[in-house]
Length: 351
Image (cartoon, rainbow, N blue to C red; front, side, top):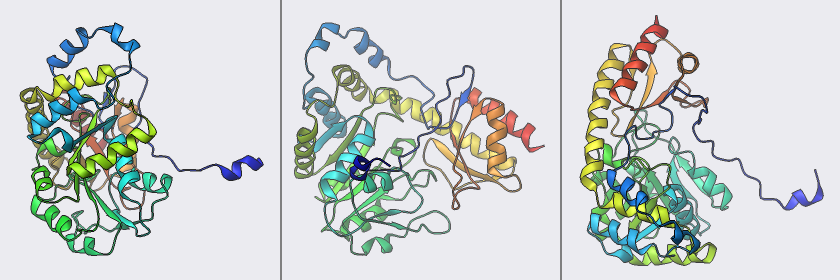
């Protein structure tokens, strides 16, 4: 090893779901929305003046911030925007988790959390979930330097009630509690109203899932104005121009068309519920998902076998070869046609 490598910050990176380059596949492995974004997004991009690209974007992304504030009935100073919720969460880790005490998050959850903790040199402890994958709010009363909870959780899809979340927030007035609501629009009740009651609560959401805009990278956080100011102070100390002009234009259009994305969410929810019935008949078991995916295991056939056989048929789902979840597959809810092809393939494989 070269001597200079002694001073390199080394990391074990987050591994995203596979992005196949081949054509004619059914892609159910990265929780993307199978439907296109709002027509208003297409119109905004078609009307975008490319001459504006020579200019830096608004560093405060005011147009987008105002649109989000209007949609969620909060003040603009209570909204932070970033390049996808991953960017928002990473910056929140850097901003708020700055003590010697460990931050807490579940042992089975979004696998980026421990990566951010490692890269930002934040001490952390993982909290075991109950045997049914639910969390125990009493455990989160331990001394900590902050808390992060995905709700609904990933990869399990389990939703915790607002009452459960409030128990955790109220028990930790000395720590910032981050609730990652990437999947909240697919069946849960957001804890956004709690941000009016608790100044230590930050709620993070994304345009990638319910708004069908994973490819344009927009995430946002809502919380007490002082929390948002602290995040902006750190952001402007790193990069003032994180949101590009096209993202601001497209995001503003999407934020103003809530009727459209709620309609696509309803379609996904209906397909998800039909999928639960179909998979149960095939011998699969799973927690009750309130997200746009299902976390399933078969009673007799190994998850890895099913994963590999589906891949041979150009159907991609997510599999983790980790002890706690190696028996499970995460299946994104696609269109009705995509799901039927999945069911047909599973019927063949399970024979």
